[in-house]
Length: 125
Image 1 (tube, helix red, strand yellow):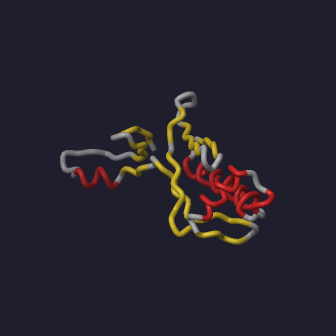
Image 2 (image 1 turned 60 degrees about the vertical axis):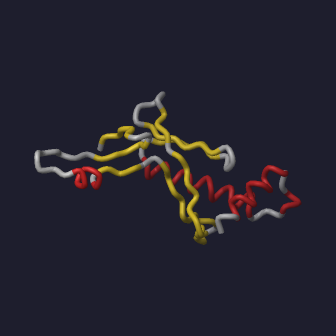
Image 3 (image 1 turned 135 degrees about the horizontal axis):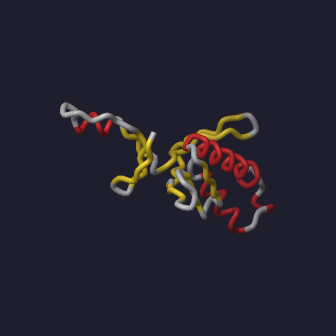
């Protein structure tokens, strides 16, 4: 599967084009991987479902061939992988850890920036 940037989106897919190939067939064979959306995470063997997904913008890391990365300053996540599904799992794992350490903690135990993060994450519930 080839990776390309098209219209400012990272896309993956391959297609054999012939004279009879329609533009609809081309667009159906391409998967947009410009963002990763997380709809649920696992916390202490329970599934936490979000009412709206957390979206992370995916970028190509030019220093490593075919490496994708996501970075979120607000949620304090920076992950990278050459496999988009593995990258998604790494993000879920990071979110689970933050949920356990921050969202489930009492506000009196948290610094101000952690309380802001807690409120932000809870806003997706």
